[in-house]
Image (tube, rainbow, N blue to C red; front, side, top):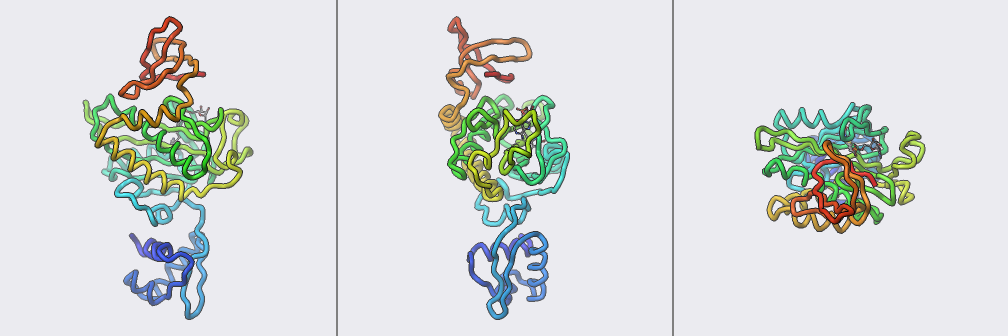
Length: 323
Ligand code: BT5
């Protein structure tokens, strides 16, 4: 932790209380003048810090800005979110995460941005990511799992996002196979998992998460208005993006550690319990075939099972599913 982070942590450990300059200088191991300079920097970063002679400093409000210091302060994970690379504007967080991973970034590193000018969905589709309204982030993980199991990480991520939305907002969310989070019939979040592997070994995965957090209707272009929504639109109040990310990191780490230890069964159960897809009549377009049927569940490995009119069950590994 750098000095600004230590100061923020001290404020968070004693919420609402004044902390003297002397105490902060001891906690940080620097002079009182240096403390004052760092407090000024925090103010420039958007923190409201009150300073009262003889009492010291106290934190009144933190900005809703996705800075590394904000996210890491008070995060109780061992590795997910323990390294944060925060940008203001990028083309996409995905290639930046790949670059960081290739240079050895630790598992759990998060790359995020306030705005993406070329956000990516699957199959080269665009992901609309306007400034300050969403959570646009890429998480680097290095699971020791065989290649064919890597799609399970998308399902694990979807389950984790869904749980985090429920815990933070109480909104009823559903997961649409394989990577969409829905509220009602609109998409609030998409997950894009990209893989870097050599022969049969996973080097790393970059899991991109795009969540419409505080967008209002006017933030969506015409073509998305009828298919997209945000947590703010659905709940009627803005959400705290920093707390959301912190809780996501905690939930992800817990789910991921359990998965690495005990396998896919718990993710499967939670996915099915929250599924938008199961029971629905779907059209599946794979590279080689098109089929229609009812989505009936996941198999033990996380592959979607679709039963056609003749009662035959098809396994859908990777495809576009329409409803
Ligand atoms: C996805 O693709 O849903 C994956 C989205 C992943 C975005 C994250 S943001 C952080 C990281 N950096 C990136 O550059 N990407 C990842 P897909 O299932 O292909 O859905 C794409 C489709 O969703 C588009 O064709 C639109 O129809 C729709 N869409 C685009 N932007 C949207 C938005 N903000 N909200 C809801 N739907 C959107």
